[in-house]
Amino acid sequence: MNQQFVSAIRLSAALVLIVLYPVPAVAVQTVWLSIIATESNVDNAVSTARSLHTNKNALEIIDTNDCHNLRKNLYVIVAAIDTQRQSARKTIEKWRERGFEDAYFRQCDIVQKSRLALRIPAVDNSFVQHDIHSINWDLQEAITHITFLNTDRAVIIKPQYQPDPEDIREGLKIRVYLHWLKKNHHVKLSDDCIDPELTHNSRFLAVSCVTENAADNLLHSTSVFSFTDGTLVFRQNRCRDPEFTDNQLTCNKETVDVDGQLNLIPAVHALSPASKTINQTGPIKY
Image (cartoon, rainbow, N blue to C red; front, side, top):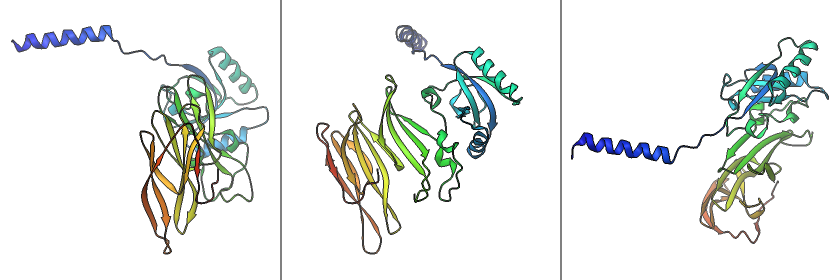
C-alpha cells in the first residue's frame, strides 16, 4: 500500500479521535491583587509585611509564581484578594489616601495547582505578627508547600510560628493537613512534623517525620492515615523511607549501636483501615 496513503489514513483517524475526545479545557481562575509592596526574597517580604502590620491591616504574602501572568520569583504583600477589578481599585485608593502612593493592583491568573488556588498565603501570618530572632532556622523554612496527590486531595505543609522561650526549635512548628479539594475541607495530621516525607496509594497516606535523635543521627516516625477521612491507621516509631505495596507498609527500621552507628533494616507492616495499631519504641513529639 502506498506509504502516503497510509499516512493520510492515520492522520484522518487521529483527527477523528481529537474531535470525538477533545482535551478538556481548564478554566483559569482570575483574581485581583491589591499590592502594597513587592520584595525579591522571603526575608524582606516578612520584614516589610511586619512593618506594615496592624490590627486593622490583614496583609498577606503571596508568591508571584502562583500567578501565570506575573513576573516570577517575587513576593508581593497584598491588602486584599478580590474577584472584581473595581473592588481592588477601591482598596488601592484607600491605601494611597493613607500615604502609600506606590500601592497598585494587578490581575492574577491563578496557577491551578498552587497555594493561591486554595487561598493560602506563601507565608503564614504568624511569622509577620511576631519579631523573630531564630538561630537554628531561617525564613526559607517558613514557606508553605502543597503536594497535590490526585484530582481531589492535597497535603498542605504549613509552617507556623508559636513563640516559646523554652522551645528548642525556637517556635517553629510545621503543621501537616490532608485537604479535600472538591469539598474545600481539611483535617490536621500533625501539629509539628520536622522534615516531612510523604507517600501514598489509593487507600493510605504515609507521613514520615523526624521525632528524635541518637548520637549524630536523626530518627523518624512514620504515621499512616486513611485516604478516606484522614484517621490514623498505623504508626511506627524509628521507621523511615515509607513505601506501599497493596495493604502493606514497607519502611527502614532504625537502630543505633553503641558506637553511634545508624543501621537500617527493611520491615514490613500489614495495614487495615478498620483498625488502629500504634507501635512506639520511643517518644512521639506530635
